[in-house]
Amino acid sequence: MNFNDWYPYYLIIARLLNIHIQRDFLNSLNLSNLKPNKLMDPKCFRKIHNNKALVIGAGPSIEEGTVQNYILEICNCRKGRFKSTISENMVVIAADGATEMCLDLGIIPDFVVTDLDGDYESLNRADSGGSIMVVHAHGDNFDNITSYVPYFSNIIGTTQNFPLKNVYNFGGFTDGDRSVSLAVEFLAREILLVGMDFDSKIGFFSKRKVSNLELKKQKLQIGKYLVGMLLENSNALVTHITTANNDSSFYGVNKYKVV
Image (cartoon, rainbow, N blue to C red):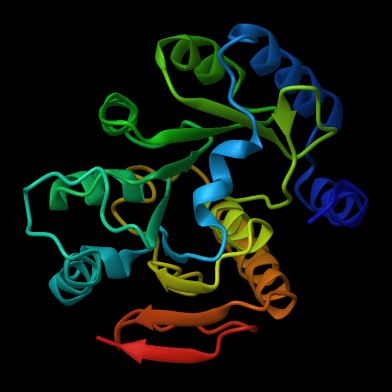
């Protein structure tokens, strides 16, 4: 999604949630200046092009054994045995808190999409294992950006505000829909969605403690809308893997698989 298409949605979201646009921009500058010579460019996403992308959200379904077994099966690996390269044709994109679950299974994601409010130890382990950290700057994570980013090795910066020379805007608001946005933007031929439970309870891997439940639910519904919009405009074959306990449907999905 180019910036001109994204910006009207951003302004609506900012108005709905009382987001400080200036603070978003200032933190983008903060991220840009922290490691300017070590921030990566979009060439790192080339491996997504024309491949299968497994996009793992942090919804409650990833806590279920059937979903975890399905992930292990399609990644062709055994629990606890780390594999930084799952398959030449499979790219794993984990949304923030889902990184912890991936590591528990022995899977090192290719990309971790995070605004740094997930489990920092897991994020650090993923970075050390070779994951590319797609770090998102917004007005409320200035301290985390400042504290954590200098210690990451493999970083590409993103923003929901105006893009900068080394901080990019591919569209998207929550970690989940920004993960989907990467798969769509860089033309994955097939997208498998797991843990995208926008209509369910807040999962363990999403938030340990939710200070404002209504705000969190509102953000999830925004994420759901954006995912549907992205998928409707994608040529990829999209399969949504879900469970009977955490069903959530949205536009643009070609196939639903209940495990």
